Length: 215
Image 1 (cartoon, helix red, strand yellow):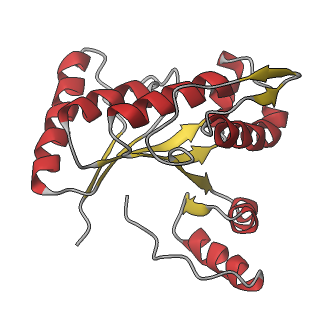
Image 2 (cartoon, rainbow, N blue to C red):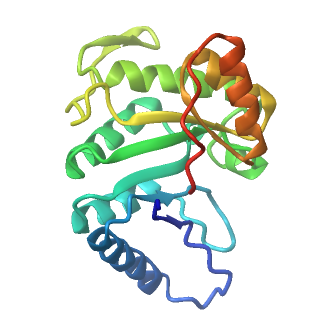
């Protein structure tokens, strides 16, 4: 049996005690960690009327400080809403705080108001998404690399060699095919897409993936 938790912190009541809700989330994660739960998933959305959590890395850091074993899975982390270098730094520090328990499901985003809020051209979201993944992978080596015409370096290095595990997310056939082609694990928006992912891996002559994990 695989035991996991998921938090998005939605509470439509505008009078809700948000501080108490966040404190309860951390308390529950500490309790679950002691019972051997495997993973906690924390989502991300912005400017949501129901209070959906906008800063999952901050929340995961709080969970990391009160737990020792449970994996911290940010799913989905909306790569298009973050500056790639700052994102690489934040995730590296979170990986250090948790002693290597971080993983992410990389999402592109789909809500128009979120792209507008951060001044992101939604028509370029795929390019931004793929470029950000590439930056994260280079950044977590700890070595200098070229970024937008200049040489940069992200420190400190994460605990995990190569950095936190990146899983591609998506809710379309193209997303499943992209993950298979690029050699990433895949977290589908709905379970049927995992069959498409497996079929594409088979077509490419790649090994079958593990069973779709519950989240």
